[in-house]
Image (cartoon, rainbow, N blue to C red; front, side, top):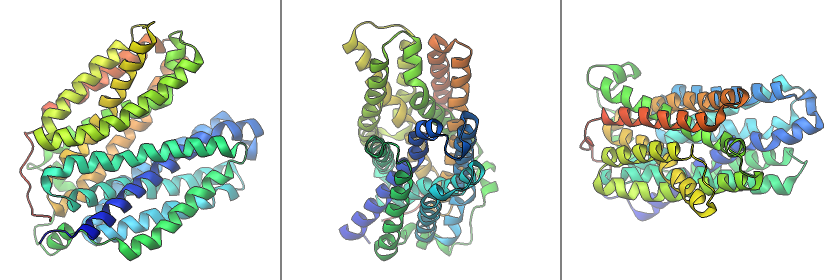
Length: 400
C-alpha cells in the first residue's frame, strides 16, 4: 500500500531536522573554541580543546557503530527519538561543566546520540521513499547538516562571547523536536515487515561471504569520503593561506566550498536515481581527485579559483553521501540500520584522521602543495573502493 503524503512528509521533515541538529551541534564546539581559549574558561588550553574535540568525535563513532544497529531489533522510531533526546539533554548541560574533563565527558556522551542520529535518519528516509529514489533520499537529507552548520555559524557571530547560548539553543531545540517526533513520526513499514522474519542478520554477517566485498568497499569509501570532508572543512583556509592567498580569500573559499556542497548534494542524488549510484559515485570520486590535485597549483585568476573550489565542493561532499545511498539499496531492511551504522562509524574514524594528518602537514610546513596531493590520493583510493562494488543491486523488499 502506498505511503500517504502526510506520513511521508512528516517523516522527511523529522529526518531532515535531525541531521540539521547534528550539523548544528557538531559545529558548536568549533565555534566556541576561540572564546574559550581567549577567556581561559575552566582553564581551557589548546590541549584541552583538542581533548574535547577528539572525545566528541570518538563518541560519534561509537554511537554510530553501537546504537544504530539496535534499530534493526527495536525499531527506527524509538532509537531515533532516543538518540535526539540523548544528545539534546547532554548538550543542554554542557555550559554547567565544572571542569574541562567534565566538559569533555558531556561532549562524549552527546556524541553517542549524535553518532546514531544520522545513519538512523538516513535509514528511515531510504525506507520512506520508493527504492529508485533512495540516492536522493540520502543526499537531500544530508543538506540539513550543512544548513545546521551555517545556522550555527550565524548564531555564533551574534552570540559573541556568550558561547553558552549556543549549547542552550541546541539542547532546547532538540527537546522541542522530541515530543513532536513522538507524536507524528511513524515507524518504518519496511522494519515492521522485516521484524518477524526468522532470517535476521547480525553485525557479523556484514563480513560473511554474502556481504563481505560490499561491506569492505563501502567502509573504505566512507572512511576516505569523510576524511576529505572533515579535512577540507577544517584546514582549507590555512592551506590557501600557506599557498599565499589573503586571509579574506581563504575564508571566502571555505564558504564557496560549502555552497558547492549543497548544490552537489541536490544534484548527485537526482542523477544517481536516474543512472545508478555506482556509476555516479565513480564519476564523483574521480572528479574529486582531479579537482583536488588542481588546487595544488596556484591560480591567480579569482574567478577561476572560485570555480575550481565550488566544483570541488560539488563533487567531494556528495561523493561520500552516495556511499550511504548505495548501502540503503544493497542491504535488506532487516540489516539496513546495522549496515548504515557501521558504514557511518568507519567514516567517522576518517573524520578524525583527516584533520589530524592535514594538521601534521601544516605543522611540518609542507601543507601546500602536499595537503592537496594527499587529498587527491585519498579520493583516488575511494574511487578504487567504489569500483569494487557491484552494479546497483535490485531492491530486496517492497518498502512502500
